[in-house]
Image (cartoon, rainbow, N blue to C red; front, top):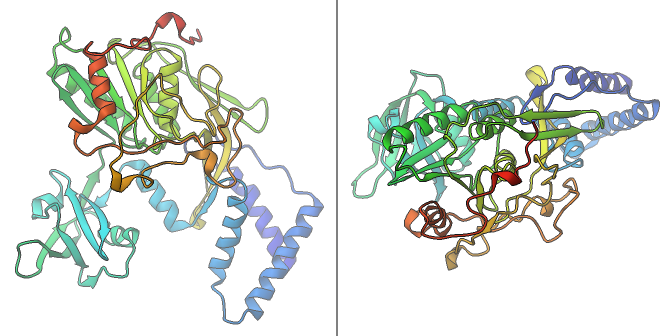
Length: 442
């Protein structure tokens, strides 16, 4: 039994490596065959597993035992490697795809109820009459009390064209409301944008499969609304952006570059280097650019900020970014879920690793944090995470900084600084950047 279990575990690991799928990284190479000592250690694991299964004071959940053992192995490597069971792997695919069958509401948990932050325009929830501030107390007759936010969201998602009944508590209503909503395809906008007089503002919230298409649409719309001779430039807001797909980070960077390296990834083997270069064509026609970052900007958003900064295409404004410079590859395990494994580190065009350090802004601008939020809206940074991969230029103080963005743009010091720079109302030696100092790889 023990020997069989050991062989099955080893076989699963070697088989999985042959089915690697890129998620923010490069495919893993085939695993080397394990040595005899490794099989002895696997035999110890099998022995302990059997003893726990047979002798623990109460019958344990065997599936949970195995999953926790696998996750224990992976989390001992670094904070970003993990095992995704079938449900978690499905959720990850939904998030990276950027669309799902659902209702179209942004929600949070408050007082054990699901609170609607806002219904997304032109979605089933908005059309059915769900309003911002509503509290959902029941989903299809089942109380939400005791559920986690993820559990509640999962219950509201489902196949397209299927109905769901929500029991809603609304301020001013003398009794609970029952609203039936028919699920539809919800496409999450990865890029929010608006025209601010003579400046185009674009905020990337995540790097999903739809990010570049959404960005291209945003740029086209802005160019149609502001005459070319009146357009002062663009603000690309990457604050509070946790990252996502590597290929989308490359495409977003490429949208603003005519040439040069965007990012390179380097794996375990010194020869395992992948380099991504820009193609000719700047969608913004070389207009001035400012990129906003803060302690909540991580991973893919740091790739974009680093590429545009090193290539002197944009001036980076804000505070130090998070410092997540590692690449995770998603390796499918069939019906057993997926393995998320750190396989490489990425480097900016100048050859700098931001692992544990982050991107340093060209112009540092602190965002005042309200007194009641001080201490809560701070991203400590990658270097503060237990077991993280130590970066070459790591900052022992922690790479993160304030991760707060005011809800009202009028109060947003970093954003208003960007507008003032673009309009010439404020000057700084770092803006505009000097193309002759760019790190161009031709």
